[in-house]
Image (tube, rainbow, N blue to C red; front, top):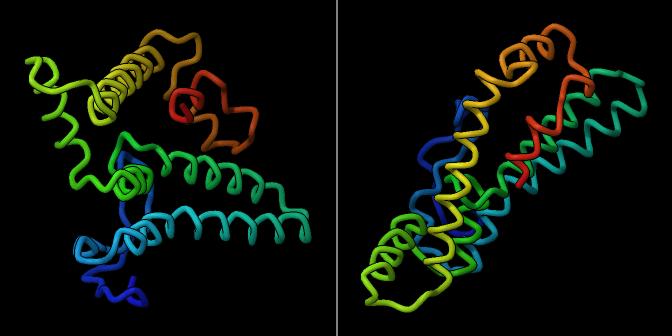
Length: 179
């Protein structure tokens, strides 16, 4: 970000939707060109992939089993970050590609105008509908996993913490978030 002409106010670590994240405040990147904003948006996933490759190298060289679990988790995190429906890297990438400031707000306004028959169906209306469906699906899925699944989400997470292994992942837990 700095090499492209910006100045970061803060760099740190935190939690976003219960997921540990590293972050850089690039909120002033709107003054940069679209291409530079896109580079900044792609940087998070780029560095996660570098981290995965480093861990993979160490894991293969040293034969450390837990590193494979870390690689898997970081890989899923990188995929999750490409999700355009939450304000993660994918959201900002799509915002930069479409050159739309405040994508969720703009798309919601376009959807309202479409419903009132004042605007034609366009990409922002499609995004608003898809985002709403995705978030609804995730909420229903999480409620199901917490309360109704044969092996509840909390049990799977506790098992994973006790013994990290690929065996504790299930397609029903991971698939909704990869979609």
